[in-house]
Image (cartoon, rainbow, N blue to C red; front, side, top):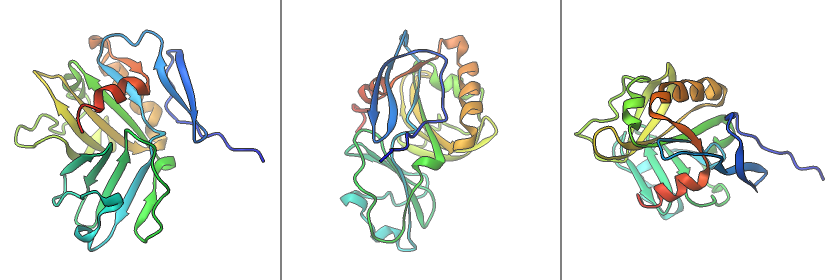
Length: 212
């Protein structure tokens, strides 16, 4: 039986150094000449679930806690859970393969419908200031936290995962799959003065593993 190959809509011009097939996705582990940061990583292949329930506070997906307030996030066991509103949360499986989608009501797998990218390293938050009015540096919010709104004029969910000195930090953003290439082009263009380069999944995993 022929298996369908799954492909990310994100395509970088930089040549891939290492590629691994995973659940029919060609996953780039490393690109040639990734530089020293900042980095842009395509994580579209990572499993992304939505969970909706009017009694969301009573749910514990995979035994993990859902944040109480909209905009709050938790990063547990490699899974980022974002509270979107009173009845909806998002789960992004960032550091481990996702199990099968739970059979109980309320879950939707949105992996194929959305793009997910990570942007992290020095001067990242200076790059984002060119692309959005969302306050990703809000000192009153504890990382990780979620903001929803336009990023490069595209409706997005944006999670600030970490903040460092000055404009250093890291974030994740997701949007509809159809915006992938225009979004990536805008980010790379905005980051050119800081030598922003594409990087592979290994670079992201090494960075994010220290955050959860």
